[in-house]
Image 1 (cartoon, rainbow, N blue to C red):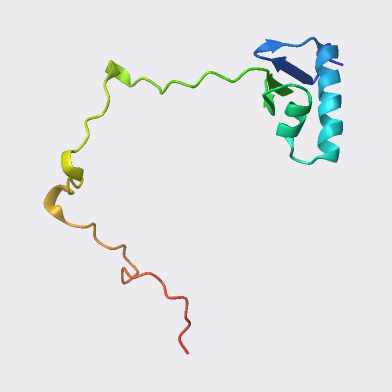
Image 2 (cartoon, helix red, strand yellow):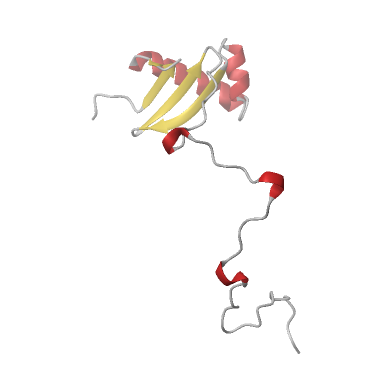
Length: 118
């Protein structure tokens, strides 16, 4: 048998010892048995901002936050530039040749109606 538990927990990013994690999971599981899906209620009742069960590195992980998470920053684009916006809501450029693609073979190009012919 493995020397590490299959249950883990962290509070504000700091991992808990196996025994503490097991205790937290036990309390969480009992609450969830009585209040199905109410993770916010468990968090409130225990003085947490949020509690999120997840799975990481082969272990069930209970992520607890006692403070509001800092807002996530949007990912930087390579070169640090934002994409240019189209002035006045211009339409996107047309396909080369300005035509629609040809319909697929074997059909009229119209959607099926769902009726059967008699």
